[in-house]
Image (cartoon, rainbow, N blue to C red; front, side, top):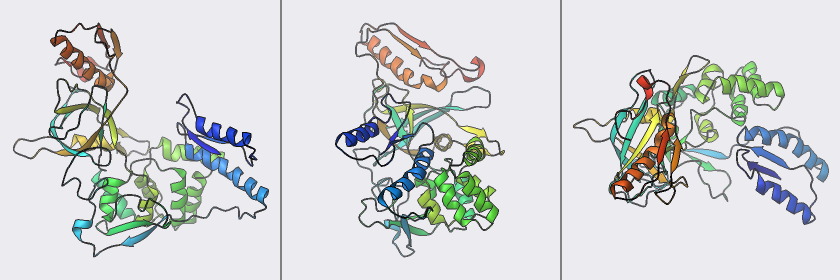
Length: 410
């Protein structure tokens, strides 16, 4: 048994531990020790380290001869589709084809609402950093939210990164293709909506800014023309202590994504379809809602800091979602920019009785959910209800630079 968990949770790996114990109670023989993966660290590393000892033990127990080598096998096969009709090609939809053109509720993670952005204004006054106040129009969507909920947004990857990755893989990004599961019995036929173009896959469906896990580097090694490059990628993707240390230094500490890896390993030219298979799905980004629906029933407000930093290699890394949002400014005389969103419910709520006193601590954008809570209590006060003492502790680096919402009653 190998359990998957996260040590930051109270019941860490409880199911895996229970199953292992229960199997023993029912008379099963434990061939190998229980493995516990911690997603708060590198869960893949935990599994690979466990698997390296597990497999020889299992082979020895059952009298099976092991080759001792991992065989890299593709899970999906490539099908290029140059003749497919354009109206059958996915262009960024999460699930249903044309769902972004023909919108219909209910809206959720698989059917996001294309929300117009009514306001996108800067909250910082100086200092070189940026914090955005963004208001999404949800009128007519039938979506409902409460203070404390989250707004989820589907971003798109930076155009320049997409182009660079395409060139590094010698790919024609306009090629229409599908990746089809080689396991015909699997319910998951494709890793993302297909057919689509490589440009759409890299822009809408794949996480190209994430730091690549070791299993990706291990597969990339097979496409290196230079032996030294192949050995290097194999080394940093190994479970040897020196290899782990080098992976930490070269990938994690240096914040190298898949584009940076291929740029710095010049003899590595993987086929674009295999890269699309290896990369994880681009996930929605979640933001604490910073408004109350009692005051703003048709808009959802978000407070977000623009993520941008220089890495040890001198590159400028940008946050996927906030960079995407920073480009979405409403302009007079032009259609409002739109972003696919949905609401995720939360358990984070004000006390049910408005007379209950509350103390809130929210420095920086940690203020966001409390802004909604304060609006909600103010609404109750305007209705004549008794309101308990409501105290907010807010902090910022410099009052003259990043004291957000200073000029307004939150």
